[in-house]
Length: 278
Image (cartoon, rainbow, N blue to C red; front, top):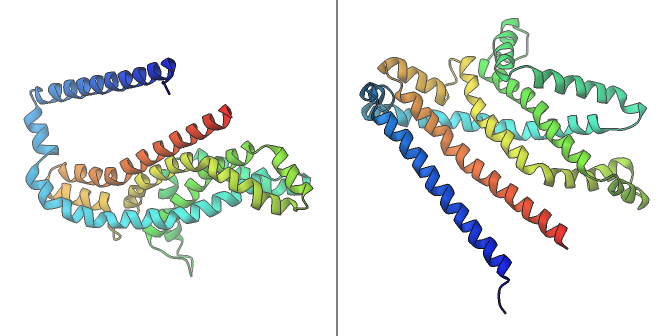
């Protein structure tokens, strides 16, 4: 069976496009490297930011401290997923009886999406411990962790809501016709479809969350994470190389997550195209 000429030409064009993109990228990167290395201050820059000795001395400690960032991320993520889904369901509820829920969730989302995350971290990390309320933790890292949850729940709730709104109303109508209640149709029909559709954008939010765990360093002097450890090492050595080491730690996590998100998006695109061609 012979291949279609059109399909063969499309493959050739795709391969040619990949080759051109690769060559152009290498040329741009090479030009940037050349301009940096040929700069008259390259030696000073290299000593301050790419010092091998300082890197070898500081990076092991920074890498160990990075486990704290991973702890913040892994413990905050499930709380964000659950709380954000509740907010999205509240905001997507229809009918006059659900108006107070819609209003509360809308105010919450607008508030925490409008305030920069770093301000929320500062407000809770310094403000709540200063109140000395009996029974509440006074650790800055805990309230910084809570601040990340509150802030990112607002963003993730909007992602969920977009997924819920993308499910056609006929799905709900069909489930109600089969005898399911409104709550059952939401939990068994609408939400599962919505979550499958929004997994790639959710991954983007969690990539940002992983990076923003470094903000907790501003409100906690005792719970040492990667950025705070790098900052202390940089001050001790009068050198910025430890900060580059901290950046490498975050890249170790964020780059694989980014590639995984790209793969999910591509798989989702192929499925849509396959469904449209049927």
